[in-house]
Image (cartoon, rainbow, N blue to C red; front, top):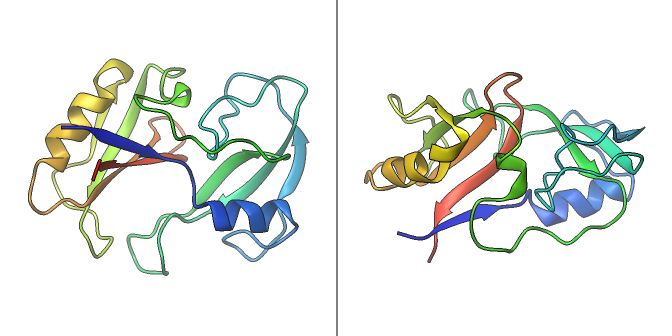
Length: 156
């Protein structure tokens, strides 16, 4: 079973970088990265210390509904190469653990799939959850702040 770790939707990322609205209809805030702990949701790497970054509200769901969580995310302020490498992205190696939750094809949480897992078990647990017939994807969030990190699907 091969997993794909997805960067945030590139159309949304490009629009926000160009001054477009975030999930709350507001422009992103500009800041300077303090280094580790500022993970870009496009390149799925920490934004290096001293580099310009954006802070914005993001909702990785196609429409508003009760399970469509919104939260803060960071992006490199300048264009970066969206994650397309294989394996677990670097932003999932910086915390001791992460919150994983399975979602159905209609973007609803599949109850019983939410679990905080050690960083070394992220891929294994995601594969277990994705092997269920009722789970279309797994979202990874910060276990401490609940911020969206990445979405995982089975490779086509």
